[in-house]
Image (cartoon, rainbow, N blue to C red):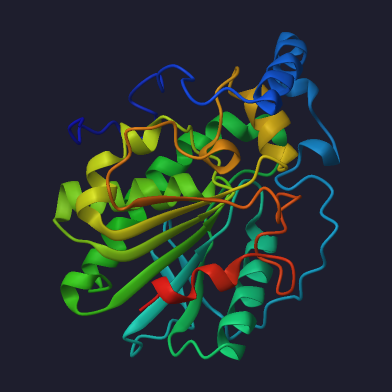
Length: 290
């Protein structure tokens, strides 16, 4: 178990080795990384390198009444202050506008299946283009700390009697884990559950950097991953010089006992599919939101 030392705005550690189960798919992806890594991340431009690539799913535009928090600015919009149960969706890389649409899709699903809480969204500055990947990744640390401060200041944690859940997609998963790490380490606060959808988080980090935050700052943390997610299997792995994302392969090992890996390889074939009403996996998290 590592301590909770923090450096604002950067990783604070190298991320370690890429130890994990060796599969045929991993070996094939390693070959892709070796080729792409030579040219660097800036060569991976265009739609294939966008946050979700060319998404084949269509998501409805979110209405203006959907609650939102902007952690960097400290702003709330249409926030359900009286809610005792909140599910906050956190979007991924370059996905500010799509993030609200994803959150609304999740709202529709949960509302139709009897969820009694409120669904909101966390809208953070995740960059505008692929060449901002590294700055966006580091910025997720700052945004996570800012969100932690807001949740504590406004009494939006389990310790204040409010059940708060995160559903986080892609790089939003890193923001979510940075938030619970800071909530635990700085404020001694916790939230109910973290649910990672295709998390763009190094697979070593849940057992290292985020160990204490997961163990002591959440009741449960669930990682939904798919080895058919080529955004993580190709693009992320190339950008991170061979490291694997926990949203692609699951955790590397050594995670705390309240971390749960869920292999959805047979179900999820695209990075933006997780949120889809019909083909996604929102139904898997409903029991964890109360």
